[in-house]
Length: 279
Ligand code: NAD
Image (cartoon, rainbow, N blue to C red; front, top):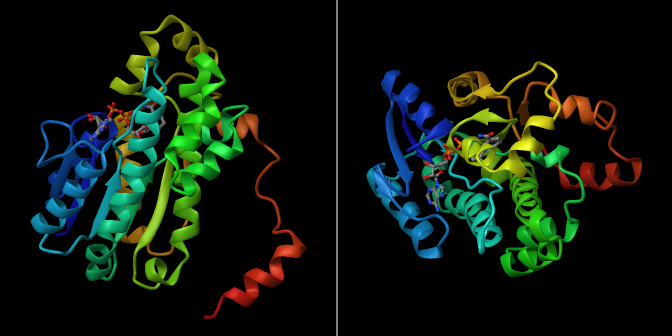
């Protein structure tokens, strides 16, 4: 049986994942703002550092996997944009960088980052906000969306999920992850009925946007079903899964982007990619 770290363990998809892993007999170290083995505020540098240190200590330096599910939805309010960027981007990347040696120690670890289908279905997300996050500059990312007024939180939410997805794809294939036996992948859910979605549905403006969004199979997703996907992506079935973003969204991404992907690698980039890679 393995040892797993799960952030966002107190609610929604994180909690459903914890329940399943524990029922399977695994040891789980939950991280959240409350009701968790490690209580830490992932919106702050100190909280993230505490989550890194306390999880490694509780796991005796050996993690068979990690699920990064803590997240803030695109709600309203002063300071929301910064909070979203801190939790949804830094709260993933800084923890994974800190936990990497413990994941490598397992020799065959799996990581699932919870992204979102907002990555491909939200219009007008400023590319400079995504780039700023990837460069570690939250202030710049927040400035890049501020002029969009009431939709700024939705834009920074999508930007944070795009940035974290690109971070996953860039790092998953690097030797220090791929050759250390760590499989790094992301799950991109659509609208899933959890407290995060309930918060959106409680605001008339956001509820209208959510309800108007096309979902070809209809309705909302179920947190337990998403946890089953996470459990599968933590299993040996994922040994050959590396840098993938798995969309589980009732068909919304396919509806909006039927022909955008798969797309062949541009010839001008191919030579560089081949040169950089050694088997
Ligand atoms: P949720 O609100 O039920 O759970 C999120 C958890 O994150 C909560 O337990 C919360 O306390 C924790 N959290 C928030 N801020 C934190 C902080 N500063 N420090 C530590 N923990 C913190 O939501 P959920 O829907 O289960 O969300 C899980 C993940 O899925 C999130 O990353 C979210 O962005 C993503 N997601 C959700 C949906 C959806 O429709 N529910 C869709 C796409 C992606």
